[in-house]
Length: 387
Ligand code: MRU
Image (tube, rainbow, N blue to C red; front, side, top):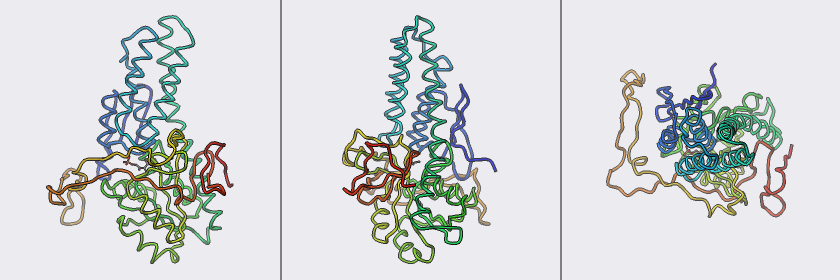
């Protein structure tokens, strides 16, 4: 079975799967400039915190490789790269992976600049440093995700003494899988790992209104991999816990993150906070899977996170493929349908902030971070593993 790939890259060429067309159509767009990347990210043809950062970084690598930089002096080359990165920074405001990637890329370019080569070697060295740093972001992300999967699965197994005879069920929200990353996924990566180890009884995924990352993307990934799974609407989570927590051994809500700040408060897809409240009420562990690229130690608390607000049509309209009378789907016929009075006022925040008090564990590629006796997450020291 071919692995799902949101991003296909070889030096000089970047293809991005158009997630607006999923699950009905597999269409890749070629993204060769910063403008195309900005548009792809803003329109959410690619989405998910790590994937946004990777596409922005690689799109600029492609345009540099293809000769977009006409400047010659090292100062001008660095200024050109920095200005393209500053432009890409404005594509979406909440996920910090993009900002962390930009800082890393600017640092790589600055280091190459200060190596003091003469023209034109200096320009070539700066461009090479940028391209190599962007490519390293892609490679590192896949490695991060497999580590998160292993650490998260082992932690949950330990918490519940799970085994192949006593498997665990989990609930996830939004899409955090191969489609949101370079592969494997973060929260969905933990679910994949639990499944591959024979420890997963069932995965529930929420629809994730209004953009439906759960029903359009996570369901698609779960079905694609043959993982036993069930789709629910966001509003069914309480009933699921009340009625099936014991019979299905539901042990955890596992979500991703767009930004984890210094005290552990976590911004993630709208609806995450409600799930954390429900999980606490029902004695279900609430686990955040976040690579260190999603951690923002500069911001003290969740109050400092800018929450993106998106357009009204995401609530008042919906698009999809046409279902024929025999139940088959006609991917060539897509329709946009009104589902509310188009005059109603709309509030559409794309993310919410879950307070750290409701989070039991944060899984990074370095291990599992749990709260200390003071009830606080401490990222200042090397993330500790309870393994
Ligand atoms: O608006 P989106 O689809 O970009 O939001 C995505 C999420 O909230 C994910 O949970 C988060 O980015 C983590 S993806 C590994």
